[in-house]
Image (cartoon, rainbow, N blue to C red):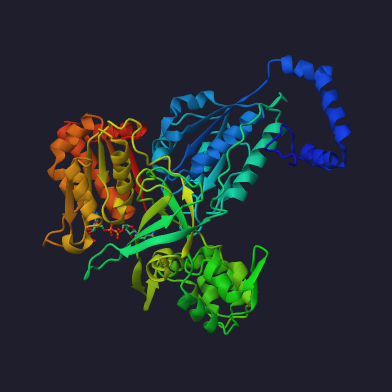
Length: 590
Ligand code: NDP
């Protein structure tokens, strides 16, 4: 294995020299060198000396676990290089400690409309409040995770970076903003941070502690497993406005494992109809060779399985600019038209741009290199390995809507609904979500709020609790449009209710009555009992729509606590924040 900045105590220059020297040595020379080094006095002295290490604090704010994983990795590497490292979630970190820290690394994602992850919120608010201390002694660096297809790309990371500077902190290494494929950028950031720490003499060369060899999963995002489809059925009845697919996949032979609360990453294929329309629009030959990441395939295949052709981003529009002769397009791309451009992006796709802003002078190769790699979609896992060993189940709501005169389709959900048959293979990998986990103590009561497809992880929760014979009470709030057609997994819930695995269930079918009824209305109706459960230590889980449902359920929860606990809204908010700290309020919302 070559020497790297991340697996040795050497800086980039030294690593380069070592990598040049090492392969030229024969085994006898290597042996002599290691014996010589072991015997050298200076090394002996170094090993006896108390290491002059420095403290580094790595804080993460993570919604789905990516930022957490990267922060932990950074912690490992820093430890390996002799630092004293504390890695902590922002939620568990006491802001009063900030004044005692001299090196701070932040790894934080942004979710939704530029919001901090749940476990970053209180620290974010503290830092942006008047109570935030002056941080003249602090050097810091921020790794921001995000997605360029969202308007407020990496906003939380940018905000932290700006605010730490405002408070007097010195940037140790420039912030790096990562798009969905974050590995390379994150490695660059870590290398940059390490080099700066080296330059600033922060670390003495102590004998590195051997890092534990991490068992590397055979299958991952980079190497997904081809899982066979065992079942693919529509859970909604005839006449429903919805189509929700229940998909069962075989994981046999993959070695893939997961826990309830984890998600499954799925690589879809684009809609062939849309691909053909693009190729026809540009009058290209579908068999023209095109290459992505050095792999050459026919253009049609590349557009079907390798690239995003639906999501429009600012970046994509700008990179198509030089190929269009349309003055309207160039006007739209001007700085003054930012608001109009943002509006244009909504509900439109690549085909719209190609149709509207010709004539084009663009080769298939130029087009292909403007597009982003096709990204996996994530679905909360709906099964437990204890109930279905070597299988994974997901619940996928097909997204279809009309916009700008054309039927639009969610890439992965309609791929699953329209073109995925039993016996086919689906490229998948497991995405751990440490922030949506059953309580460690199975006696803890749980309250699950999951309307629509949000119910998926709770099926996994119930299967798990049934399999281990958990004694803790459980309560499900489920909602959807109609009782007759949309009661997802109805018979399973009823069986669990009967056999006591599920203690209580309250349902809200929004379109069966004149007045809409939602899950939060049911929570309100049962507020006394719900508060009693909270006081008994129940953990609350919310899964499903982020835009409206999660926000309304959150407000309802605070309202119930305030009413039933005789608290002001501030006190009720603090009660919920405390639940969050104790991991008794977890959300998986999208
Ligand atoms: P929905 O969340 O759309 O609907 C479930 C139930 O929730 C319905 O009865 C609905 O009522 C109700 N509801 C609507 N507004 C609220 C509210 N403010 N508070 C509480 N309940 C409310 O279920 P789906 O499973 O179809 O979708 C779940 C979420 O997932 C949606 O946000 C959807 O957009 C999103 N989604 C995202 C996908 C993706 O690819 N990212 C794929 C599929 C879904 P009513 O409709 O009658 O008002």
